[in-house]
Amino acid sequence: MTSLLGHDAQAAAFLGAMRSERLHHAWLLTGPRGIGKASFAKAAALRLLAEAAGPAPGGQGLDVDPEHRMARLFAAKSHPDFRLVERVPWDSKGEIVPEDKRDATTQPGRNIRIKQIRDLDPLLSMVPSMSPRRAIVIDAADDMERSAANALLKSLEEPPSGTVFFLVSHMPGRLLPTIRSRCRLLRFAPLSDEQMRVVLRREMPDADGREIDALARAGEGAPGQALRFAGLDIGALQEALETLARTGDPSNATRAALAKSLALKAAQPRYEAFLERAPAFIAGQARGLRGEALDRALDLWAKARDLAGSAIGLSLDQQATVFQLGSYVAALAAKD
Image (cartoon, rainbow, N blue to C red; front, side, top):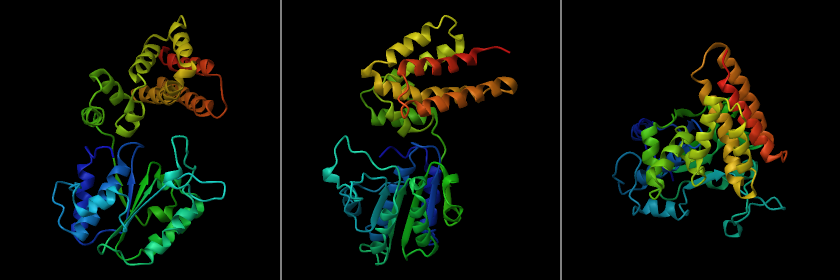
C-alpha cells in the first residue's frame, strides 16, 4: 500500500461516522488515479473490522497494529468478512485464473464482470463471521461492466446488515447516477510536492534526490502514478519537454535526439512513459495561460492526447510519434 499521508481529513470524516453509530453503508472515494484512494479504502475496511471485532486497535487515524488478529487475517488475504473486487485475468472458459496460476505475463481483463459481483451473493446472504461488520472494496467501480453495475446496485439499494461498501472511482461521472446517489461522497485531492517527496522517499529509500524530485513533479500529486515511472529517468524526459516548450526547438535537434533515443527496443518503457507525460505536460502548461494562448494550448493538448492514446494500439512508428508529440510541445513556445 502507498502511504495515506495527506488524507487526514478523509480519515477523520470516516472515523467520525463510524464511531457515531450512523455509518453510511456505501462510500464513494473519488479523485485522481494513483492518489491513494484504494489504499485508503483497504485501510478503512481493516480499521472498521478491527474495531468491530476487538480488541481495540489503538493507533492514530486508520492505523491498525500489524499484530492485531484482524490485521494478520487481512494480510494473509483470509479475512472471512472482507472482499476486494478488482479486474482479474480470465481463462478461455470464462473462469477467473487462480492466483497460483498467474505469472508476470498474466494480464487482467478490461472490466469487472457481473460474475464477480454475483459471487458476492453467498457472502452477503450470511451474517458476518468475526463481528457485526463486513467490508467490500471495489477498485475501481469505474471498471464495472454495465450488468455488473446493475447487479451491485441491488445490494446498495437493500444493503445487507452490517456491510459497508467502499467504491473507488477515478471518474465518478461514468458511474450510474443511482449508484452515486446511494453513496456518501469522500473526495481526495492531490498531495503537495513535499508530501509527495515524503511518500516517495518512504517507498524508494535508495533513490537519490534528483530522481525523487523528478518523480514528484511527474506524479502531479499522485504517488501511485509517480511510482510507475521509477527507474525510467523521468527527469531527463521532463527536462526535454521543458526545453521544447521554452525554446520551440527551431533546429529540431531536441526532438530528433529524443525521438531517436526512445525508438530503441530497450527504451519501450520510457517510450510509454513519454506517451503519458507529453499530453500531461501540455495540460500543465495550459493552466497558466489565458485567451488565444490558452486556446492554442488546449488544441495542442487534444492533438497530443489523441496521438499518444492511439500510438500503442495502432503500432505507430515510435520515432515519428515522439517527434510529432515533441512538435506539439514545441508549439507552446509560439508567440502571438
